Image (cartoon, rainbow, N blue to C red; front, side, top):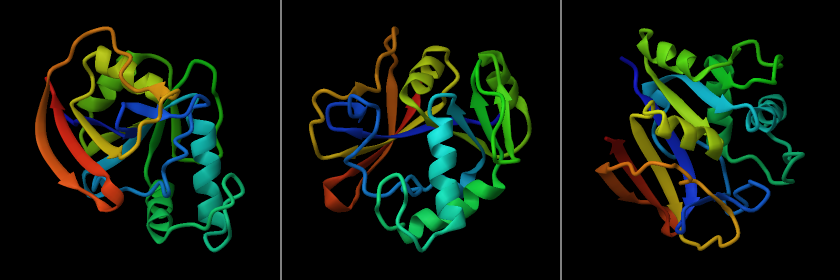
Amino acid sequence: MRKLIAAMRTSADGKFGNPEGYADWVDAWSDDYGLTPHIGACLLGGRMYPGYEQYWTAIQNTPDQPLPMTGKLVAPAEVEWARFAARTPHYVLSNTLASAAWPQTRFLRHVEEIAALKRQPGKDIYLMGGGQIVASLIDAGLVDELCLIVHPLIAGDGRSLFTMTERRPLELRSAQPLPQGRLNLVYAIN
């Protein structure tokens, strides 16, 4: 069975974004988790997908230009992720979204469809977010692994990643320091 791997960037106090939901402390959105060789599909929530598609489409179309959403120049690793994203199937769990510009995007309407997706042959599935879908799928017992890049700051009034209703034991698989005081943590979810 394929694993569902949630990977998120958080502040030291467990926030995945500011009050508007954007992690303004993240400099680049490349694959710092090292998941790319192991994943064959990406899963996102309906609130996150439109901005995700816009962001990565801009990088795919004009990788040498500042991003219209942030005004920042594209990091080389982001160009690599954009290429990967263009050829990788994406699934969006949403009751409202019905169309996407990316031809490899499919919409799922029920959590049970994610369980069925995990039973299909292939590489693991990268659960990218947002925070609400990560929390709900952990609660549903569908997430097998949690990868966190913890940034060295206290975000305060941000959106908390861990809003689950049930206690979940985690088993530390690895901990690796990253540049700028960040920490990469990988947990199995029991």
